[in-house]
Amino acid sequence: MVTISAKPYDFELQPGKAALLIIDMQRDFIEPGGFGAMLGNDVTQLERTIAPLKALLAAARAAGMLVMHTREGHKPDLSDLHEAKRVRGKGSTTIGDEGPMGRILIIGEPGHDIIPDLYPIAGEPVIDKPGKGAFYATELQDLVDQHGLTQLIVCGVTTEVCVHTTVREANDRGMECLVLSDCTGSYFSEFHETALRMIAAQGGIFGWVGDSPGVIAALAAPAEPEAIS
Ligand code: C5J
Image (tube, rainbow, N blue to C red; front, top):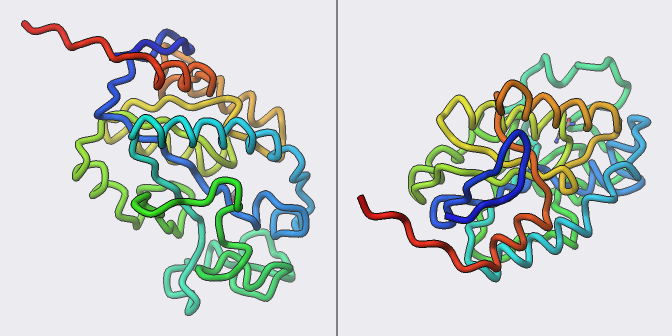
């Protein structure tokens, strides 16, 4: 076990049972000129997550920690897109339509892909999710079971939408989530701050909030042996 400073209290990392889960660091959400920007969002709010996430990703890989990535999107035939999601917002251009980086949120299109700085490497599961939560209609629970995971270090965008939904899903499945403040981001800074407070409130009702330097230091530290009872 390795102790990481976090809110509301220290997080006890169990290296063999923890994975890094990076949510939706996709070009369409993050890059200027993507779908997120087209909707009028300030994508520069998300930029600050990239450098710390890059360092964390390198540290997790070096430590041999399982890294999983998610991408929000849909099949080209839209068979996994609920009509309610397709029409939400009453936009003139919506999911599946031609956007600035290919068809919007469609698997295989340039905008749907993960940004080059954080690109997955061989062996890292990439989970395509049609919803906001990473457990809904995906193979994530199978991966959790297969790898014997009990903890997730959760990063990515956006804090109050896909990160929060995933943390809530994981929490209800009995998992411990450590969410990193510098590696998560929102188009709205006040939503980011409040979403993180909500996670750690009431004794950690959804999980813990820490930061990447704490995790990177923990990954570099020799693990203390478990006490034998
Ligand atoms: C959104 C996400 N914001 N990844 N998706 O629609 O949070």
